[in-house]
Each structure stands twice: as structure tokens, then as C-alpha cells.
Amino acid sequence: MKKILNRYTVTCLLLLLTADSCTKNFGDINSSPSVVNKPDVKFLLSYVEDKIITYQGTEWVWESMEQLMRFTQHVTSSPYEITNNVNTRYNTYYLDILPNLFEIRRQADLMPAKEQYQKVKMVTYILQVMHGIKVTDMNGSIPYSQAIEGRYDSKYSPVYDQQQPLFDNWLSQLNDAIKTLSNASVTNQVDYGKSDIFYQSDWIKWVKLANTLKLRIAARLENTDKTKCQAIFQQVLQDATGPIDGDAAQVKYMNLYTPFGNSGDIDYRSRRYATTSIMQFLKNSNDPRLPIYFQQNDLVGSYKDTLAKYNVSLPAFIDPNDPLISYQGGPADWTTNPTVAAYISNSLIVSQYTKYFLISAINRRFFSPKLNQATGNFLDVSVTYAETCFYIAEFIQKGYAGAVDTKGTAADWYKKGITSSIQTMNTIAIAAGSTTGFTGTGETEINNYLNNPVVKFNGVNDLERIYIQQYLGLYRQPNEAYVFCRRTGYPKTGSAYYARETFNELIPRRFWLTDPGEVNRTNWMAAMQQQGFTPNAQDITTLSSQRVWYDKAAPDFGKGN
Image 1 (cartoon, rainbow, N blue to C red):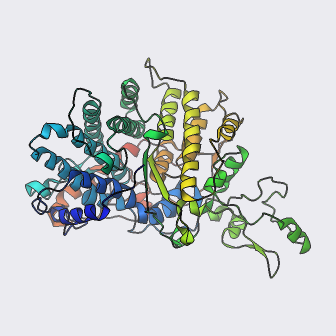
Image 2: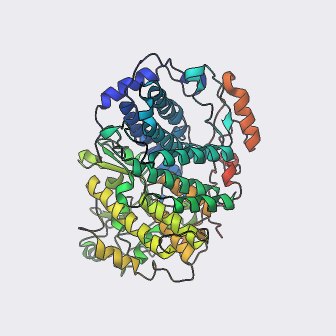
Image 3: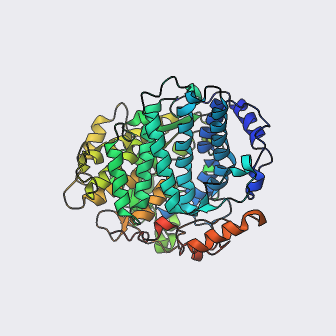
């Protein structure tokens, strides 16, 4: 991982390139490409890669922790209304990401030796697909094929591409990128050097990322087009390079940036806590990620003596003989168990001098390494090897590989995914100066976990075990976790293995795109009507009942097969 260089230079370039941008009107996104005659493509790439991560500062607070992570039941907290602060992914795409990726390609084509910029250009398509998937996840049809024509062709009313052709386009662009980047005969190529924050111009790692993104698309298509999902999976397996194949090929970012600053933004509006379901499973399986994900409560040290001194008993929901008594979860929906939920916001009063908080909060330093002036670093791993492994394990288990060489069984890939997830989370914790799950390699702890009867394949509910480990591994990827729960219906309500808790709130299946104004209202309205969306609706009843195209055949939350 390399820290970002020349950040102020990059920012200045982009301010010139995107001056006077507006969040609603595609006509306003257009800026004269002559403002900066020859921006350095290396700096433009640095800016885009940086923005893909750092724009999430408000997203973590308003969308991920306050909404998506509650819906997936990774955390429990006070329920708040969904506000206009969500969906920042959308504006970021059109203001900061696409314009600069297009500009890289334009500048490359203007070079005297433009044939030396083929691989430089192909990287840009991978990045715009990567973030584009995230944008369409919650918005459905979006401008893409005509999105940046205002910048160069003075066309300010792009059509909204429907998801099916959108995914087809992205798959084609990823395939073209894979072909060019992996072609050893395409030589004498200019590269980005260290300005490429993610991979330092290692073209093969870019190929691996492109293949993993194809798996992301395949997973999203499964409920709507299973045949295509299988075909994509087999293509990835047959590719000579393949998808991300180790921790070194993950998309990593670390800089002075932290999404929560050095203040209490991690607790903005409310603190977040472990749900009962995730806590029970982590404890029952002796998961090394438990102390990484969640903080201990106050039942540590000599608490027993203090309770005895004041003749105070623990509430009935806590087993006094629990060896992991310092870790407790609360109901995902507070209305389902108000007795326990009361301890989320209130402590157990032992005396006028002593009180104990009983429900375990999220490990705040893990997410906010600068909290209270601490000096840890925020390491973001936005596309992981574990995610790749669990896709492969899932699709093998479902029989999607056909006669293609899978280079291992579903169980093999399952173990690789678990191992990488635990190691990656521990690495993030180390960087953050947070609580870790182990010291050294963690080989003993991970092997013990893999052989735990709760975790090990048993030949009965192996697919569910893959699903749950996939779910646990997405704790730091809220959008992917939400998409996973939405597409699979897992964790499953009533499961004897890992049950989703009763959740009485309506859960939105999408976000909203408001009227863009007269310049592109016709195309926007056509997209809303085609998808069956109520224009401008922002109420939960509507958002929970209207789905994007690839989600229409998916199960309800908790209703997996």
C-alpha cells in the first residue's frame, strides 16, 4: 500500500476540471476540457481512487451505520428516518469519478504515442464499473452510456440505462480490460507508477479485480438470469489469470483519512451495538473476529465482588457462568424485546458510585482509529479475497461450475475465505491500533475456528454455512452486506443455525432519484415509469415495495430458500 502523493496538486486539477458542478443537472456537470490543457493522467487516477474511498465519510455515518448495517442486523441502534444524506454514491459518481476517468482516456488519445496508453485507459473502465455497480444497486436505471456527453458534446440529457443492458455493457468493458491488460504482447506501455494507489500499476492485479467484479455482477444476476450467472462464473474460472487470489491482490487504501475524524462522529446521533444474533454466533463458534468487531461491556475485572457487595443481580438475560460474559448483544429491533433493549441506552445501577453497561458496542477504534486523538490509521479493503472465495464456494455448492476446473472444492474455497477474512480484519485492527483477534500469524486460532463443529462443513447445511461466513466477512462492507442479505434472504428467519431476528421495521429495497429538472426530466420520468417507481417518493412504505430490476425475483429479507 502506498500513501497518496501530491494530494493538493490532484485536488487543484480536479477543481479546475469540475468547476461549477451541480448535483442535479447534467448540463452543469459539463466543464470546458480546455480549462486545464494537459492534466496529468496519473494525478487524475489518484484523485479518483482517493475519492472512491474518502467520499464515504458521510456515507458511513448517515447510511451504513444508521441504516444498512441495521437492516442486515450486523448492528443495532436507535432507528432513525432515512434522510437526504443517503445515496452520496450517486453524485460522487457523476461529479468526481466518471468525468475524470473520461478525461484520462481523452488525454491518452491526444498523446502522440497514444498506442502506449492502452493499459492506462483500460484501468479506468474497471474503476467506473466498480463504483457503477454500487450506484445501480440502490438506484436501478442510471445514466451511463451518455452520462458525460455534456462535457465534450454539449448533450445534457442522457438516457437512464436499464440494469440489464447496463450489466451487459459493464461485462463487455471488463472483458475488454482483461484482454488488454493480460496481453503480454501489448508492450512499451506508459503506467501510473505509484500514483495508482490501489495497485501501483500492477496490471495483473487489475485483471484479478476485473474478474472479481464479474463475480459481483454474476451474484446480482442470479435471481433474474441464473443461466447468465453460471456462464459468467465459468468464464472467470477459465480465465488464465482469474479473480483476486490472495490478500496481496485486494483493493487496499490507507492514508491519513478517517471517515469519522478524531471526534465522536462514530457515535453521531447514537452508539451502535452488537445484535443478539451476531453476538451469539460469534461466541458459540469462538470466532477470532469477536474482539475485533465488538467492545467488551463493563463486566470485567472484579465486577462479581462489586455485585456481591451491593447485593445486585445481573438481569435474567445474562448467564452469570458465561465465560464470555463481557460480550452481550441486544435485539436488532428494540420493540421485540424492550426489557433487554432498555440496557442498550441505560446501565445497570449497582450503587451510587458504580454502574455497568451490559450491551457490547461496536469496536469504535476499529472504525475510527483517530477517536479521542488516537494515532491509528484507517485501512480500507473495499474488494477482498474473502468475498471472492465465498462467491466461488457458493457457486460451486450450487452446481454452477459444470465441467470447469474449480481448483478446489466448495469446502476448500470456504476455508480460504474464512482464513482471509479473519487475517484481513486483524490487519485492519492492527493498523487502527484497535483490539486484535490474535498476535502473529493467527494460524492456531484460525485452524481451531475452521475445525469448530459450528463452522466446519457437515454435509447437511453447507450452503447456509457459506452464506453465514460470507455475511460475517462483509462486516466492513455495508453495501455488499446489504446486497447479500437482499439477494439471498439470509440470515434466514427461523433457522436453527443462524436465525435472522424479528424486525418489524419496513426495509427499503432502493433509494430515490429526484426530479433532475427540465433539462432531463423526460428521460428521468421514462426511467421511473419503466421501473415501476413512484417519482420523487421517499417514504419507506414505497421504497420497501418497489425494487430494482435484478432484485425483483429475490426473496424478502430473512426469507431465503
